[in-house]
Amino acid sequence: MPKTDKREYQRVETRNVVSYVCVDKEGNEIGEGMGETLNISQGGIFLKSAYPIESEFILLMSIDLENKIHPTKAYLVS
Image 1 (cartoon, one colour):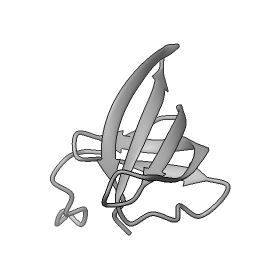
Image 2 (tube, rainbow, N blue to C red):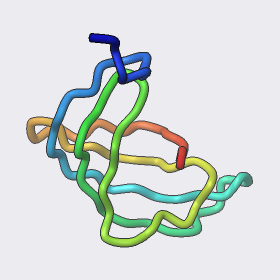
Image 3 (cartoon, rainbow, N blue to C red):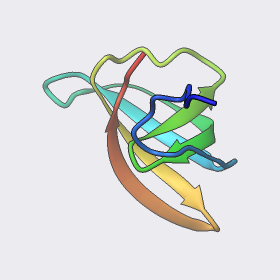
Image 4 (cartoon, rainbow, N blue to C red):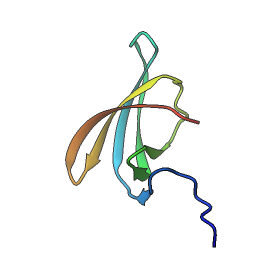
């Protein structure tokens, strides 16, 4: 059977709390929120949030993995 998933990295299902801050291209904060990861890979995170993320620029995120906070930087891909 041919491989239908064309992702470079394998996704792993996970449920982790994420807090994020949206910034514009100059680094000014324009929003913040909380969400939950649905899956994660070396190349990205599938994030579920109660409200749309209103930034096309960088998201500064803190991810709770096994009760440890891991700050990270990311960008939004639709």
